[in-house]
Length: 220
Image (cartoon, rainbow, N blue to C red; front, side):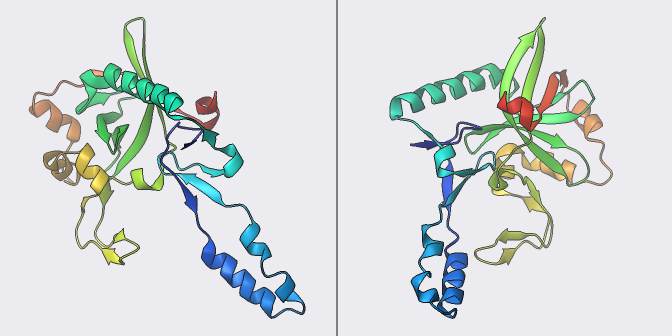
């Protein structure tokens, strides 16, 4: 089983650049003696991309694990989810007064930051701990393309394969798992202060330290 060394996910797929290889092959056919070299593009190594964190990898960078080692990784993920269980589905405020929702979608745990009208940013939660009874969530901004968008605006493509686009602002498939319809309607409201809205609902925001890890810190 191939595992991404960055986020330990097995959601890794090979990037097939067949079209480009065919084009190079055809060009070589029109070059003198190119017929003897037109096979070369097809022996270049393929790259892989992790759908969870978006990291591009060569084959030799992937971790190979058997099912027993994979089970250990699943246990670690389950332990992280158990630690975060009291906050799942709830809104928190960090030390810089930024507003996040802790939510689970597509098997991953995210922080969803509301940073403007119709704007939300997702971060992967990678660690949770408590220091001196102060909870702290560490997260990463390295998120795969499938997990980046929570809200799609009018005119955005829904599916590049089917060439479809949406004619109104709506939640993505991931967004439907991370946000409720009521939360979404209030996020896209130009005149709404979401802090006041949450207070009116009687939802007390818990203050939690949130650290967005840089690439270097995450690798450490």
